[in-house]
Every structure is written in C-alpha cells, then in structure tokens.
Image (tube, rainbow, N blue to C red):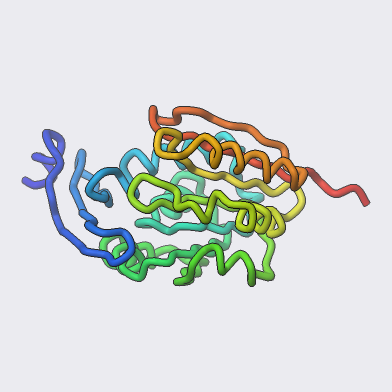
Length: 220
C-alpha cells in the first residue's frame, strides 16, 4: 500500500540525523526508495538520473577498470554502474560521513555489489595520499545542495587530475544556482591548467551542471 501511495506523493520511511549532513530522510517516491536532505535529493531520484546521463555522455563502457567515487551518498551511481551499464569495474568510494555509509549499506544494500571498497575519509585528504590511478573519477560532494568550498579550491582541483590514467575522465557534479560563479569557473580553469580537455553539460535534469575533464593519451 505504501508503494502505491508513493506514486501520488512522497512517503516518509525513516529519519536520520547526521553531524555532517544534518537531517536526512528515506522517502518512497514512485515506488522507489530515495535519500533526501531537508532541501534536496541526495541520492537516487533525480541525482541518479543526472549521474547516469553523465556516464552516457562520457561513453562509460566495460573498458573502465578502475573508478574513484568522491562522495558516496546512498550509492546510486554504484547501482547504475552495476545494473544499467553491466560493469564490474573496481570502485573505490570515499565518504566522510559515517551515517551516510551506514545508510548506503543498511537501507540501500550497496554491500550486495562486489569489487567495492568504501573508505571513510575526507576526500581532500584521500587525494593527497592516494597512490592509485583511475580511469574515471566522479566528484559528487555536497552538503545540502552546495559543494563545500574546499572542493572548489586549487589544492583539491590540482590533486584530482594526478590520479587519472591516460585518457581518464573526471565528472564533477555541481548545482550552478548554489555555487559562486568564481568557484564554478575555477574548477574549469584548474583542470585546463592540468592539460585536461573540458566539456560542460548544463541543466542536466533541469538542475545540475556536469563538468567533464578528460586527459589525453601521453605521447611516448
């Protein structure tokens, strides 16, 4: 009955409180569980559509072997990669909020997927110490509906490209309406300085921009 009513209006299933992300809600919408904050969708729902669109735009395929996800949320992009793209790529997911990790495991059963490593850490700190390299890096870090300032600044933006394999790609999810234009531009400028080719897909699903940065193949 709850599932049926959820096609008419969102149905609240659970409430959580996080020291980092504040009030979190598990809602049933159109028959599917989603993770929301008090002001925006946080995982599944519209966000899942946005990230799936981005993966299509960057021609995600089975040649992707190593993927870094900065910002786990409920793990919707992991579900998309496994179920929509049929990929068994190794995924390293970095998430600072232990409550989010608990929700991803317990409410969305992310642990059912293999080849997933979830690391509780600040993404900025992880970038500084990581010695691995990746084919795709997804930056999907939000508090509420804003990308925290440190992830739009030079230190972080210069570190991310150093973890890319040749022809690797970064997909950076932003909400233009909640980001200062200077920070929005700085993301692109720093990636350009790193020699990456930039594309921007605007108003994906009507709300978000996806900044795509691609590393060209090294000439030996």
